[in-house]
Length: 412
Image 1: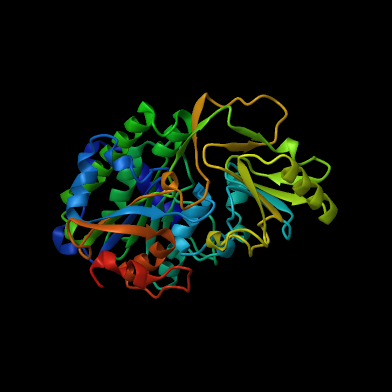
Image 2: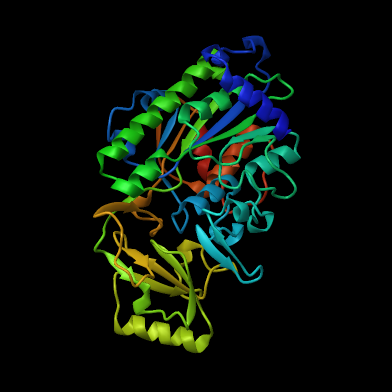
């Protein structure tokens, strides 16, 4: 199926702009479609940083949450997988962007796409797998885990992640799926943009580059909205905009060097930034590390599986290390003896998921969402249940609660 789609895709992008014209009529809309869009690193207050006419058009047409709470740690892979499985990290197995599995004896890193596509890393069931099992076609214009085979399935249409693919081409691909014949058309489509995350990391969340990234995404969503209207399927299409986490400003001098607490001979260190997973060689080494922390405390916390806050839901999985170093917001963890090469000011996330600057966004417009509605906090573990309801499919058991999110549909 993927190879057939690629042929159609490359044909569409090789022809002039009339490829955007609808290939179906308003009489052939078939079942309704849900388009789930992720804007990586789009913080909950970014809506008001600059003029965003297309975002605000959706706000008038649908439901806007004050914020969406991510799960801990508030990083990309963890939260993208939570959004589509409804599970906390300790239950879906993606516990950080970098991790080690003692059973598999292998390392996972988001920059290693070959390793990340191995099925054994992904222990939850994404919404597209649930849908495909029930005969509902799905498509993914990039989403964490969508290129991995999970429970023997992938989306009907998908592509390997390519960060260089322009926003316009991504939107055109989504619109081309809407142009497919009724029997081949997906009812769930995911779409991903990394713009605000990249700008936030490199320049900080208060930079002019982040403002430009917000404008670029507003334009991209505008292209999507216009394409949907052009096809006459606006009343049958639900558009949901989310993000995975927020972003905090960090100074280069706010560095915590793990070498001051963990010797290479004592433990394995996996990951840096806001969270590092530390695997001591044994109980003796673990006590030595904790003794150094006690003698020289810093802008961080160290948790064992026994004392990590229950609200983090971050204790049960085998990939969670015996010691978890968690930096205070505005600080970062490294394990190099060399001076930091970070910019003077940069952006980081992964901190305590209850902090205001870690909050994500939720905005939805479609036939089941009341117009011009404002609600309070939404939790991202509930999004899977919401999607299952919109697709009219039976959901798997999750850590979410549809009753908690049903108010978005005016059902309470």
